[in-house]
Each structure stands twice: as C-alpha cells, then as structure tokens.
Image 1 (cartoon, rainbow, N blue to C red):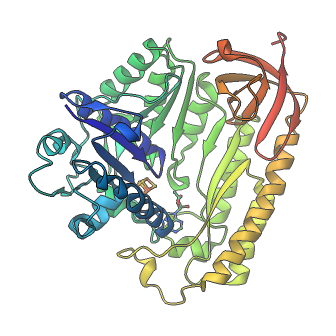
Image 2: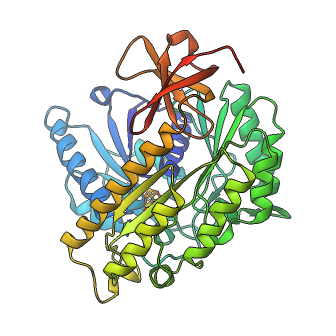
Length: 433
Ligand code: 5AD
Ligand code: SF4
C-alpha cells in the first residue's frame, strides 16, 4: 500500500482529472493523502497552456525532489498536459520517475505497483478514451465538477490543447446524469459541467441544451454551471435553455480572446468581434442579471497597436464582470508559434498591463452596482481573513463575505450586499427573500 499525493495545476478539467485519478488509484490497494510529507508518491497534474505554467511545475518538481535524499523510495510522477506534450523527454529530468498522459490514467495503479523496477511512461493519445465506468473522488463536499466531454477539435492557432488532449468526444448522457444525481444525493448542491467546448456536446440525438434540461430536472441539486463555451457555437437555443432552467446560474464564461476581426481570423476563432458583441447583448436581454466573464490574449503575433485598441474598446463596451487576461505565449507545434511578426515581450507585457488596469476599473464598477441587492449565497467556507465571517458564491459567481460561522457551510443564505472591493462583495444576512 502506497500513499499518493496529487498536486494540480491548470484548468478545471485538470482538477476534475485529479479527482478521477484519485478514484482510479483508490480502487486499488493504494491511498490518497493530502499530506505531502507522508507521501510515497507525488504526482504533478500539469498544464501546458502557457510556458509560465510549465516553468512553475518544473520549479516545484526540482524543489520536491530534494525529499528523495531523506526518503530514497519516494517517487515523482508527471501527468496531464505537460506529460502529453513532452512525453519521454521528461524522463531526462532525473527527478521524474514516471510520465503518464491524459488518456492513460488507467495504467496508474499498475505503474505505482511497479515503481521500484524502472522509469515508466505512457503517453499514447487515445482519441476515444472517456474513462467509462470510472468515478472521481471529490476533493470538497460542496462543488462537483462533472466532465461531459474530453478533447478539442477547434485548433485555435495559439492553443496546445487539441494536441495534448486529442479529439473531441462526449460522454453518454445517462452516465453524466447518473453522476450528477449521485453527487446531488451525496450533498453536492453546485454542479459544474466541464468540457473544452461544452457547446459542441453531442451524444446520439442529444446536444448541450438537452443535456442542460435533463440536468435541470434533477431534484437533489440546486445550481448548475458549465465551462467553457465557444462563441462560434453558442446557439439561441442554448441561451433560451439557460434562461428557462431555474438551476442554471446567471453566469457564462465566454472567451473573446480578441476584439479585432483580423486577429480573430488569424486565431482561427470562427467569429467576428461584432458577432461576439451581439451574443453578449442577447445573453443580457434574456438574463438581465447574467455575469459574463472572458479570456483575452494580449500581443498575439502580428497584433498592431490599432488591433490591440479594438480589443480594448470592446472590453470598454461590453464591460465584463471579470476578464482573465494573458500575455501571448508561443507553444511549439501550434500554427501561431510559426507566424512571422512575433510581438516583443515588452510590448506584450505593456499591452497586458493596460488590459489589467482597464478590467480592474470595470470589475470594481460592476461589483459596486451590486450594493443594495439581495443575493443568494452558497456558503463554501470560513473567510480567509476573519474567523467570524463566511465566504461563498452568488449565482452570478461573485465571492461574497458576510458575518457567520461554520454551521452555515453548505447552506444557501440570503445576503444584502453592503460593500464591494475588487473581486469581493460584502454583506449581511437578511431573511427577506
Ligand atoms: N498564450 C497565451 N494564452 C493562451 N491561452 C491559450 N493558449 C494560450 C497561449 N498560447 C489562453 C486563452 C484560453 C485560456 C485558457 O488560456 O485565452 O482561453
Ligand atoms: Fe487545461 Fe489546457 Fe492547461 Fe491542459 S493545457 S491543463 S486543457 S488549460
């Protein structure tokens, strides 16, 4: 019996995959631990989306490998997107004992049984792997991530994901519904459906709106979210379904990436800036309380100052509740990495900085608009800053802090918003609905 510690980087898909890996490992005689000091095996579930994400993990591995001096039997493994991207070459790093790609997690128990013999790597892409019949062990008791599809067919020119995670495939609807119901029966009230592009979910005659409707009819859950949506596939039918499904929260994460048509074209995004803008208008017309969050890349190859300003202006116009802004990072093997006119680092950084400053102002304004409103908060824990306060999320995905104790964790509470700072609302309990 070995104790396994898993450290997770990257997107929510990786968080869900770590829970799946925990499930696969626990099905054998091994055990998951949340104490790295007692671990016999440390697994890093990694992200390749930007170079920075990879560098961070390599730094962490170098650090943790010093434990091997005092604990010679300790083994370190790399799984996830970096394992898929770099494969066997990772084993040149003496700190790393095994490498397992995103479609090979079923090999993990066997690898762990045989770690003392030699190094291992299994990174073959299997474009049909959906881990049927395997279930996650969830890390918290409140929010359940449910993977509805794996892989991606979009090939945005900057993105490594189609290469690391392979082709798009959807899980059977009955399995997904069973997993959501099970989670609900165990007390998880907040479900997030996960996929690289949930809008292209397809199983038999079911597409994503039908899946949402089915999920909405499950009594034991209270909130449904989903990530991530692609603007080219966000249909009117889906917007209508969101609006008419009471459990589907008023929040959508819809990556714009750029507000310039030429850049969007070279990114291979399949929509114009105006199309994106119209989608936000439609969403807000049908769901006035909806929060819209986005991803933006600054300094894509060939982006001129004027093209950058188009993005800036769309962000001013749309007023996202929050924007994840990134400096373009070339990923070997993607089309954009070979584009001429790569933008110098200092310009990418300077543009990123301008986007961050703009969005900070917009987010503050959006949050201040919430003052005076009464919001339903799902209490998720004690506030990090004060023992006398609890913290949770509103339906429109805003962290909200208010006076309370741990008995409230897991419950839904009406809170009147009294203040707003950068990304946090503050308020007080109210019994008025
Ligand atoms: N450089 C910078 N940002 C990237 N993203 C994806 N690939 C890259 C890249 N090469 C961003 C996109 C995506 C988010 C998850 O990461 O904005 O939506
Ligand atoms: Fe997630 Fe993409 Fe990072 Fe892989 S590369 S962990 S899919 S964000």
